[in-house]
Length: 410
Ligand SMILES: Cc1cc2nc3c(=O)[nH]c(=O)nc-3n(C[C@H](O)[C@H](O)[C@H](O)COP(=O)(O)OP(=O)(O)OC[C@H]3O[C@@H](n4cnc5c(N)ncnc54)[C@H](O)[C@@H]3O)c2cc1C
Image (cartoon, rainbow, N blue to C red; front, side):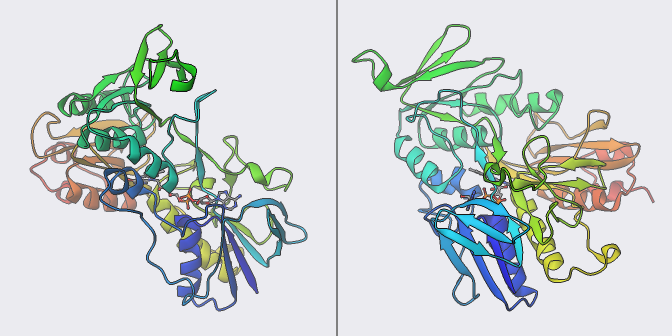
């Protein structure tokens, strides 16, 4: 038996580790396009960018685990009928295959090479090198990555401007009335945030008139923002282009469409992490979750289903309460669940006061999602309430002095 995992990020490596933990003793290869030993991405926009850590490698002994790491090697195509993977260094046969190729950062159209993305170890090292005190940094995009990059750059003494096309920061993740509450974090940190501001292009120093130096971010209203460095954080797309022609079903956003057991449309092929979307029975929608916890939990379930493909009805289903965290402007921001526009929003605590605050989304009386700002205990308790679908008493849930679990209806 040979299991091949494509992608040596969190999802791929954790699938391999879970296979060993769950007793698999056959051949196991993990293929990674990058030359580096596998590493964790969250520290890239935090400690690695701040220079507090050189790298964020997983501390694993691949030899002892019997994992054949094939680094600097990319999968280029797949023949699921022949159970054969094509790579840039020859073909590999497999009995079972795991797709864990993650996502790629989206660049602006015509983005010059001098502008930075923040997805890989190399990206973080390149960006760190230009974050000197006094350097002018323009961050395009006020999403999770943009906010974290701005936080690190400001901590390092840069002058930071964040440009966001939407009217509020974190617009893709939170409803406007909640996202708006994070605006003052930028001002307090001394970061200029320009919302409802679209970028038309970036001109780097080579293209600028002699002597001007640096780059310019051209806004669609005609303004030019001078910058010593530009970082673009406008999202990521599943890295699945190499599957073209394989017959593997992708969803309308290009993610590998798996079923609830994390199986793709091809026999013996599973997919996990940022590259996949799964049907959430809990939320009644297909979810693509680009967060760390999903890469870990999905990997464990995929490993179990790879090893024990029992009768259909017995297969464990993947139906998590998604979770992620972000560290921005000195705050720990955590979110669990999934909310939809029709859900009722309940604020918990005063966003202007010290001591943190939160937001709950209720369907009827049942919580479906929770945002916790500097309230990690709320997150732990809230996640459990969401998992169990426990109805809440609204007034107690809105009162930050009441532990969230004590807001459960008897
Ligand atoms: C800067 C940054 C900060 C983050 N911070 C947080 C955070 O604070 N909290 C949180 O919850 N989440 C965070 N995330 C998200 C989290 O890191 C991702 O959800 C997680 O890394 C997904 O893991 P993955 O293995 O699915 O994909 P990836 O980590 O993208 O790994 C996929 C790997 O597959 C490789 N690959 C791609 N194509 C091929 C191919 N054809 N052949 C071989 N290999 C291939 C890639 O090179 C890559 O190494 C952050 C992400 C980034 C980029």
